[in-house]
Length: 80
Image (cartoon, rainbow, N blue to C red; front, side):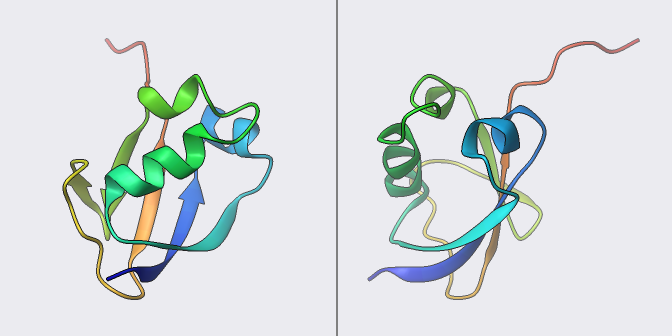
């Protein structure tokens, strides 16, 4: 069953999406990844982004609950 979630984009994911956030209806994180991959400009990034569901790392099989906030994070480089 699909849940309506708030998707927030960060850093390079935000640039690729062209928006800060949006509401989407998905059943799984894999479905969200597929939805993003179908968008021009996000197709290459979709395979390497990470997802947080309400602040917790989420894999593709995760089913976000209704009203969840899902953060889309691009790969980060750097460190100390």
